[in-house]
Length: 123
Image 1 (cartoon, rainbow, N blue to C red):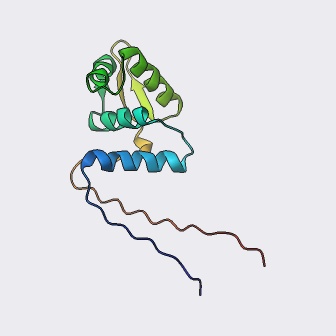
Image 2: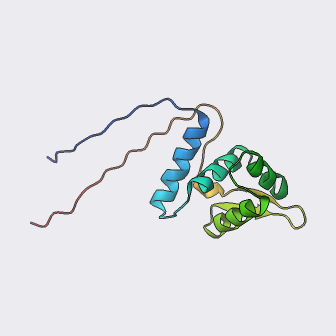
Image 3: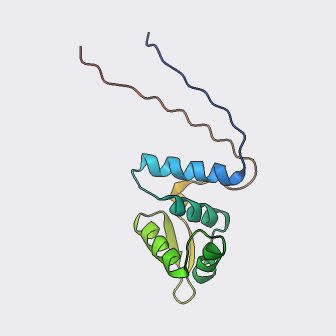
C-alpha cells in the first residue's frame, strides 16, 4: 500500500481570485508563461466575455492594468498567439476567452482539483 502525503486547503474567495486561480492553473499545466498584468487583463476579459476590442483596451487603461491602449493591444495579441483568447469580427472586433480554458465565472463556483504528484523510483 502506497503512503500518500495529503495536503488539504479550503478557502472562500471572491470571484476575481477564483477566476485568477483558474487561469493560473490552466497556464501552469499548459506551460504558458503569463505576467501579472496578463493575468489581470484575462480576468477582466473573463468577466466581460465578447467585448469590443477598443472599448476593452480603454477599460484596461482606466483600471490601471496597462498604461496605454496600445500596450493593452500588445498584450492581447500576445495572448491570442498563446491561444488564450479569440478575436471575432472584421471592422469592430470582439474578443473573448478561448472556451477551451473552461473558466467558470457565474454563480457559485467550487474548484475541486485533485492532483497526485509521484516520483518515479527505480528498484
